[in-house]
Length: 330
Image 1 (cartoon, rainbow, N blue to C red):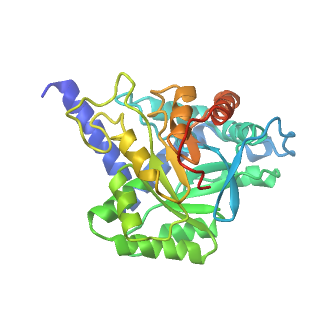
Image 2 (image 1 turned 135 degrees about the vertical axis):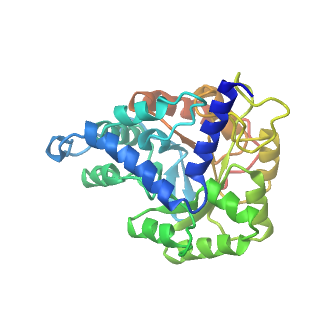
């Protein structure tokens, strides 16, 4: 193994460590790193925009999860939180954190909302103060929270999401995959039942299709699923011998798009498709069309503030020229 291979394997191992189940200390480390950069680039609270939001410029088609209407295109949280699936480019995550200052995050939320996006996906362990500031300005952005089961208190992060005002909460993909790997489908059911008991929409996310298959088999009463969907039609896609759900080089999260589309064709629960652009490797116009045509009810897409208007246009274009057979389930 040469030096480059070793470095990339180490990068991959480090990424998996950060996203493992019950990684409380690692989560603190990630948040602390992000917080340190935020502190360096922070804008005093008195200098943050606080007036009412501008009038909406456009609207997006909507769908329902539980009793709440969500825009078909949703805002991903990775770019805002500074998590980057950037292959072996180690500078990208710090760059995101330096660019997305509190002022810039508020600008992104504003641009999203005035162009018709009304939902964002963020983890419960990241700083959500900018979202709360957006709400104070009159913003109506809905929060879909990612949470993981933790050692000692299975429901701790889900309780946190409820307390912080999340409109929907799902088990993060890595957490759900670990539960299924350990044959803990009963714990998946406990989490879903708890979230629903609080009057909040409950979901399960996954990179591996087997997680969704197990939930359907066990008839877990989820309100929605969040599942990766993208083609392998990009230059850094996995080679044929690479069969893992996450991809050896951190560049694939949907092992077989056709299999996912076929499975969801008979699933009667709302489906949020994520990683549709394979972390920026697939152009949004092509990625959105593929996801909506493939049966996704909603798309989660990471966007910088300057990408929002164009991405909304691409989503509306895709929704206006559909070639899908799966009925809308949300």
